Amino acid sequence: MKWKARSFALILGLAAAQAQAEPATPQGAKQVLDGYIAIFGPAIADKGIVSVDPQDDSYKVTWHSRRVLDLIPTPPDELQMGDFAYQITPGAGGAWRVTADAFPSIVFDAPTDKGRMSGKIDVTGMHLDISYDPAQPVPFASHSTFGDIVADVRVLDGGATIPLRIQYSDLQADMKQTTTDGGANLALHETLRAFVQKMSIPVETQPNAKIDASFTFGPATVDGTIDQFRTQQALAAWRFVLAQKDQPKNATSLATLKTLLAAGLPGWAKMNLTTDISDLAFEMPLAEAHMKGFRETIDLPGFTEVATGGFGLKIDEFNMRSLFLPEGFELLLPLSLDFAVGMKIKGLDRIARVALDDHDFMVEKDVSPEGQAKIEQIFKSSAPTFTLAPGYLRSPLIDLAYQGEVQVSPNDSVKGHILVSVDSLDKLIALVKPFAILSPEVAKATLAIGAVKGMATTGPDGRLAWNIEMSGPPAQATVNGVPFPIGK
Image 1 (tube, rainbow, N blue to C red):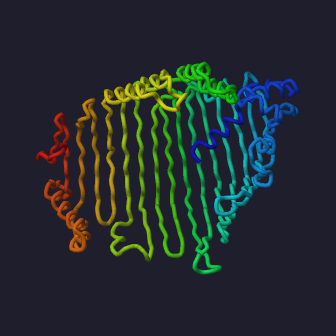
Image 2: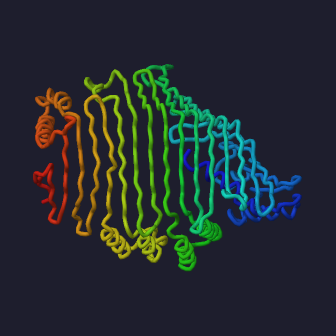
Image 3: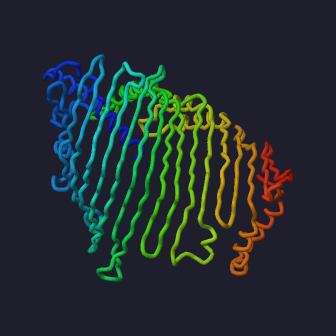
């Protein structure tokens, strides 16, 4: 899901502001079409890709898919898609509304490296409602619903046919946009009731035998925000790229584009995307896996003076069963994980400007060696800080917790602390010990685990703990106050 629905909604409404709040006229239809031409270039009108027709108090916009496909090197029988139409209704004070209630089916039949892939994608229960009203506290809002998106595919691989079915059920996407002095704030919320993927895999050694496999999950949500996105500057750069797309690269056009991009810095203030998925399951006759919950968080900074970002991953109760798993593997499951790392860095704004000022950037597709040296120096002098949020790794074998923060100085030394604790190492030692006589490496690992246990302190709750402190230069480290050799 992610930002697909957001992008779709924005594309539909890009030229709606050209419409006027009055009975639809041919002149008004031309104004709407001119708005799309300004975004996508004159080819969409010259080739008849988009048409706009007045209907009562609204305008019917139709994207003629066949004419789009005629522009790409794909034989007509390999990809077929019907037209897509929606209504634009102007309102008072520059307001407008876009609605649609159907999406065309897509049929494809194309060769692959080993055979052929054919199928059909159907969308049912679709409704789009996108509106803009500058007089409202939230000027832009979009609500999209899809009852089912179903893809039925047949893959011909050599002499075997593999049927594949993918289905999204009850997909909804909502997006809102507010305007600030620095740009636009965007917020996205998507929900999905269920996802199902099923396929039958032929068994090469057994004619007519197949292995059925399925992957399912749901419900699921995606939440995203972009703060202070420089929409006007991004649109100006996009329009310039479209206007120059058929022209050869030259120093003048690249300089103009770099100027437009520089005017849009820092691009945005911050960006966040959080994905939550429940009840993930993979099933086939000889193996199955299940995960109660999965969460992924991504925080991306803009090219700001002080930038913060990070990445997080959380897994709840991952289980796996199979006759092929080694003995003792069940002691590792169910497995739960919570891991998140953050970063704070200074100078991303200067790095962006160095790149845009560099002659080679966008000409040779990379920054020159001189520019790379400048960027490296900015990065090193920024003393980036990395934060390990309180997290855990849990299974029947071990319960591990961790947190910490480290900073990298311009002379490449690291200072900071990491705190690690565990309920016990006894189960882990008991699992590894029988294999020590079979492998020298396992024997070394057993000794290492014993040495690590000997360095721990025991807290009031009985957990073993290691407080690791790092400083320098010269590089130094202590574990629970005892010096620990690091570096050269």
